[in-house]
Length: 295
Image (cartoon, rainbow, N blue to C red; front, side):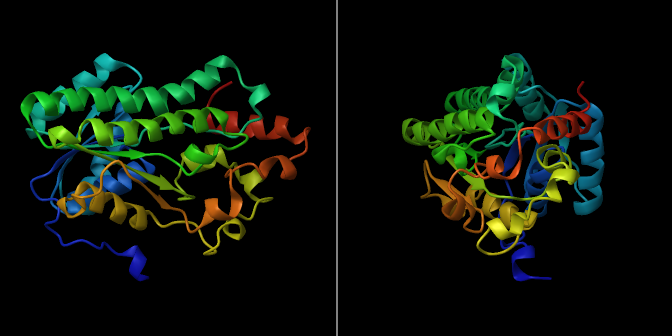
């Protein structure tokens, strides 16, 4: 095992922390939840599908020997976010950490998108993040809790990127939210930071973004200076550090973890237009719809 595939913090680094994670039922959210548990935190996860959350909770129990609280929640709905926060407090006690991880994305020429497709991505990414930030932030201020929010953005939040315009718009908003609240809420002892990940393969999201037939034509590692995609533990290590008290002097910051990808490529998916001829977009769209179960 490579060093970067191992946990980097002492086993008690998050003891006494209770952390809520949106989109915690799969992918990077699940990986962060597992490592937070291993470091002594209590963890609550939410997502839209209860059966997926139940499966994730069972997997986390198996991997860590610890239980998590889960609650079905559509982060686009503020009343559901409030319920998620309240039920988490009932189950685990005071909450002092929030990870805004829930997201949606797909590759498409912008002119092929409906307004509903655009809304779906922006609402999950941006509205979901500010709904949770507002709900938990008001609670922390009222209860005088030194809270800590970690937002998951992306490198094209500051460069923009062709073919993922809804995601770029939503993530840019979350980037502004991070930096703004990092200043405004510091006086309450609340920290707000973000991570901008590069390619970290995840089942589901990765398949929707890059259908297998599409991946056969794309050499992702060649676009990353270090020559490989990220390992989940690497991101979990960084997330745990930012959620711990070791990072107490980091505020309103965004840390990139992408193997140098954005420095090499600028807008992360801009190269897609050179690779896919116009007639192939019909095939890509059909593949993405089949992965997402939408007609």
